[in-house]
Length: 423
Image 1 (cartoon, rainbow, N blue to C red):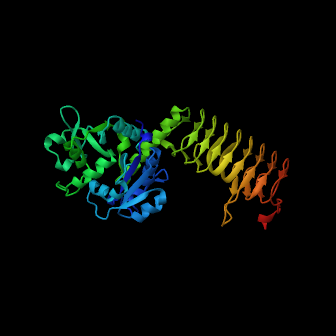
Image 2 (image 1 turned 180 degrees about the vertical axis):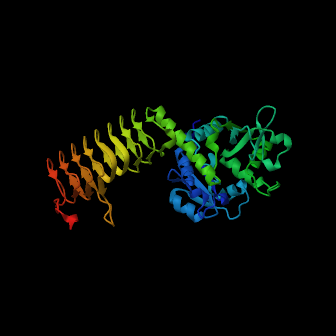
Image 3 (image 1 turned 135 degrees about the vertical axis):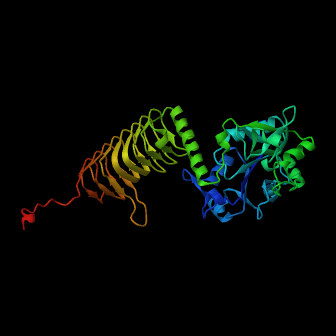
């Protein structure tokens, strides 16, 4: 049975304090590539087809709710008494429902949706009441250990502080991510007790409780251990940014894009780039950007949100684009800012050109036609339109529309005062 055929609810743990981040902001609203950690996890939940997303909030809940809005439902955990206790706070959203519930964490943001779909599908096809996502670490210090019986089935999950010396030698660890049968989980959480070194209600105890009832449990080992990395401080935040950068850049290179230096190229999520495009070093391309085939981008280019770049376009060094459309064959070579702009086909934008798109109150559009030539050091004061086949003289400040097939000149006449400095 595929997961699309069964009701999927996702429960996101987001109540912790995250004091190691050393910030006045919640750890979960820190960003990787301009997107909050908790928002990334909500997007994961959406991508796996969740019918409902419940976020358990606590510390600085108002910051998390400001980021997520009505995209999710909220449960409140006033006292931080463990993961099992967090699930108890969300019980009212689960009671009386059938299907699967996936447990995620607001600070574990780079799991692949495919991994979660595989976890759900295994839980369904193997008829498991609980399926745990696990990993194998050479140094498992700090993680709960997966204890299996002689047949390989999961016997228990033991937190490190409660583990025996023999159990601490186990290398298979608990990621904390689960897929549960909803009805079985709701029943089991009432049997959890805080009889452990931390005095907390461990969600891991649900595995033992289900096993004691004869309910089948299982596990799936994640192929890429970086997927389950969490964020507790700014060092780990940088580490996850590097992992995501490598993952995204590798994907583009496998799809036919040349990236000359992956270490200095930052391509955000959901960017689309066509084959045979070359990305030079020190280039940043933000989200919601589409770039066509056979383009040349950078070096030192900054392509921001809302840009659409057609085939055979050159975007050179020290160029910034924002909410700009550039049609095929156009060149935007160097030291240029185009914001809220549409540029036609086979147009050349001269060095030092800027669109003056902000009047202090509103953002305004600049329209540049096909086959235009914009001279160096031109200011285009929006809203303004440059017609097809027109040229703008270097050094002009254009405040009025320029018709098709025209030359626009807007600069003061040069005056030479002979002998001025001899005086």
